[in-house]
Structures are given as structure tokens and as C-alpha cells.
Amino acid sequence: MKRSKRKKFAVTAVFIGSLSVIVAFLLVSFLNVPRKSDDSETGDSTADNYYAHDTEGTDSQNDGEHSENVTSKGYSIKKIDGVTYIDNIMIVNKEYPLPESYDPKDLNPDAAGAFEEMKNAAASEGVKLWIQSGYRSYDRQKELYEQSINSPDANVTDSLIARPGYSEHQTGLSMDINSVTKLMGEWKEGIWLRDNCYKYGFIIRYPEDKEKFTGYSYEPWHIRFVGRDLAKKLHDSGECLEEYLGINSEYSE
Image (cartoon, rainbow, N blue to C red; front, side, top):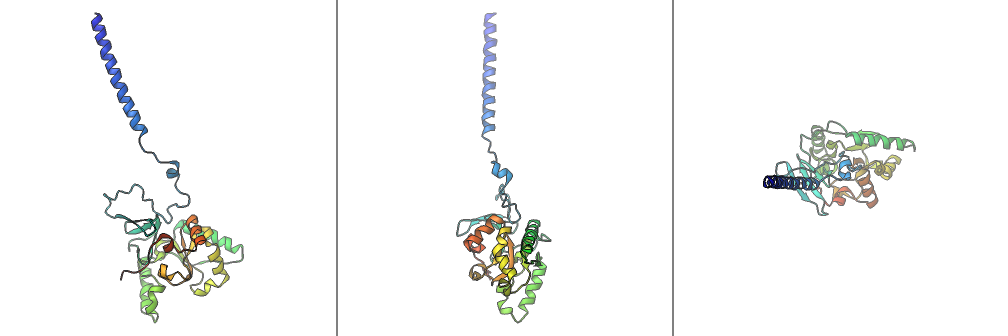
């Protein structure tokens, strides 16, 4: 009888010991599961995907439309569904086009909202700003480009107007403000825009004396929404977007 009790006690002890090992293993496994930090859960308040793309979790092996490289300054280049993101910033220039199918239909809501805020601030200082041209579809850009190459200025078309698919207007993040003339840079509206647009997340996309980087002549009327943090960095450094990222803007043919 005593032997039987000892045997039952031994079996029970072995069972409890095994169960303890299993519970401990599961507990350790749970604690080692990677968790998002608070920053990744809340996101970067200055990069709310109005100009960027959240590429985390993209499986390049399963997504045939995903590729990655780096710029001369080490910023990541990711191409997703035909759209290029450099350091998670949507980039469109002579080197990085948009697919014809990319069609947001209208201005990006955050860009439009930022413009309204900027317009009101300018008005409070006696400066009137308005959007002369905002979102532009692939087909509309094609019409404008064809008009230009059939005009007397055809020899300089590529320094004045983007080819279809290569226009920032197609992103819904760019706008032409007030008057499409270089004199805009000398008027109070253009001066105010140049000195203040960064405060609202915009940059003068094609600054003076930067054609060798941007591929376009000076356009004091053309602004691009990039978010306040990046806009301030570019304003303070005096660099254009291509300089800052270490990329080119040249047509391949």
C-alpha cells in the first residue's frame, strides 16, 4: 500500500514538473515576441502619409512591385506600385515618374488644409494668395506638354513643363500659386511665399539657381507639400529636394 502511494506521488510530481516546464516555456516565448514601441504605434506626427508611404511590413519577396535601393546620401529608395518613395517621401521628377494609373482625383486633403491655413496667415498681413493650378491628371499633363512641344518654345519645353507622368501636379501635393511668371518672385506675394511657406509644410519646389539639380527653370509660383519638419530643414539649409536627398532629375531619353 505504501509503495502504491509512493508510486502515485512520484507520477504526480513528474506530471507537475513537466507542466511547470511547459508553462515556463510559453511564458518566455510570449515575453520575447517583438512589440511596437510607443513611437511606432502613434506614428510620426510630421509624416502622416500625406506625402509618404508606410513601407513597414512590406514583403519584397511576395510583392513583385516592391524594390529598394539607396541614394548617394544613403536615403532608402523604395518603389511600390510604380510610385517612388525616398526616405518615405513621395518623389516625382525627371528620373522618377508616376504610373499613368496614379490618380488621386484632387488635391491631397492635408496639402489643401495647409494651404488654407497659409492663405489666411498671408491675408492677415495684407497678402492675397490663391491656387492657380492644383491637381492635374496624367491626361491633362499630356495635353499641356503636347501644346508646348508644338509651340515656338518647343526647344525649351523640357525645362519648362514636365512630360506626362513626370509632373508633381499628378501627386495632388503641388500647386501653382497666383501667377505663372518669374516676376512672381519679385512681387510681395512671391516674396511672402518664399519666406513663409515652409511654416505650413511647403517648399518652393524649383528654386532659383537650382536647375542643375531639379531639371527645371526657376518657378517662384510652384510649391510642394512635404510636411513642416522637412520644409524647415530645406528652408534652413537652402537645399532643394534633390540636393537634400542626393538624387538626380534627368530624363533617361
